[in-house]
Length: 212
Image (cartoon, rainbow, N blue to C red; front, side):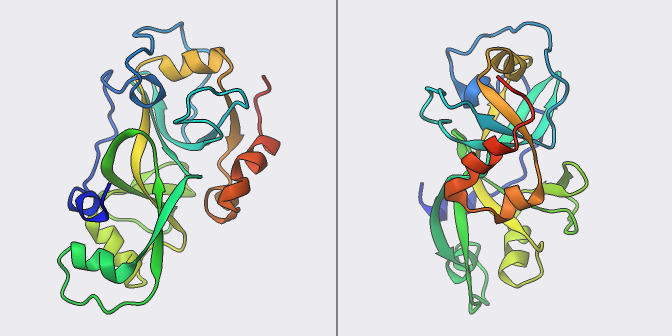
């Protein structure tokens, strides 16, 4: 997906996901119904793919859960960087006149659903009207102005820019948890932002809180 097309549709995604968001990020073979909930809300936690995860879209992934309730779940993969882009290129795509800014940003593949949609996962001291808080320490914003703030040094202290997301319909994540497809781990900001992406899955596994 070209960065120009991605940034052109960097829009707010309303987090009230409906049942159209299918299990495992839009898998049409995912069950339409699921057993009663077997876990509490996982909002603000990390999902860590089980070692035997067969789905290549999620093998060895770590997913930050932004929302999880009776309507479904929404998360962003945080350990699949795909490229580095100069801020100047991003500002040009956004149509800004002042593009003479230093630095670059790493772009992540946030999940297989709607990879044209962009999200900034960031530390909670930064806030815009569109920002969705997660747990008091982490938040998500999806607007071009947040990218501009990042480029000009007015953005959050820590951030991940991702395109796409993982979505589950009602009860589907609970079903996958019951099938032992995932571990969970606390979403420590160090894990979310600072740890080496190449070793994040191993580190998150060492911090898991639900044993298979």
